[in-house]
Length: 321
Image (tube, rainbow, N blue to C red; front, side, top):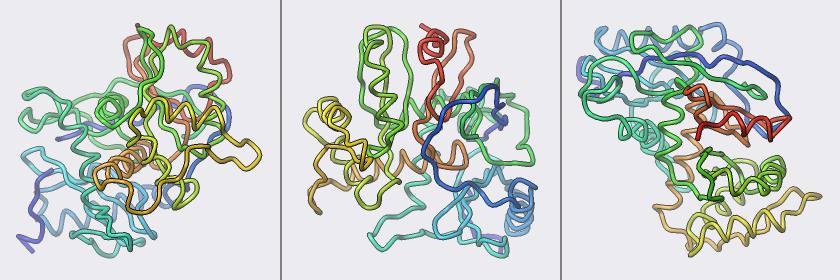
């Protein structure tokens, strides 16, 4: 059992995101089962990882995985992070790759989302692989924020990244810039999400004030959404492709307008980018929900919202220049 896992995983201080106000509707996947809310899955994961590593590794948090599997992010004494999978009832750990029928390595993709945080942290800073403890990985219809504490251990929920790390990850993921303002937001969107389309339309008058980094994910209509998201990202002019998708969005069928690429036309690198964006959002919030907006507020703190702000003008005025 000693060498079952090659523990290689930035040491995160986790801060649960605090819900502050209600927002409009959004598209989302199912979150963790209720037992996770009662710390049941987190406790099971902690017992398994503690036993297999002889109490040298700890569980950072858990999040929903494929076919009922539970993603478990762990850290070792050196501060590195890694993702493994746990069976639905917490009886066993799956340490190796989880491969889909399409040949996608979900373990590697999940690890890329974790690494997206690590790469943005300077060496020696809280949460960096060489910096010791702290930092690292960070509900629907809520405005959230918080200041992560480097010394803080994961709470009983074990579900969310710190607000700081959610912003760090978002900055590192593949995105498409729309607008030219000196304020910046990061928006996770599915090309077939009608709420994302409404947000895109409502953002147009603020193009001179806000630079929106649109991060494509694919989950609403499979396999169309992932392929459409990849097609937009791979286009010769991704910004033009995104505008085409949203300007001609079919509200009745809730479908984007960008042509779905034929099989084999999307590069593996772009497919991985879309999957990494999707998994990263899942890891950050415990579910995939669009639109999700991440930004730094005028208070200097990172924040995120799931869904459309009820008053977009007031919301955007709270984004730091």
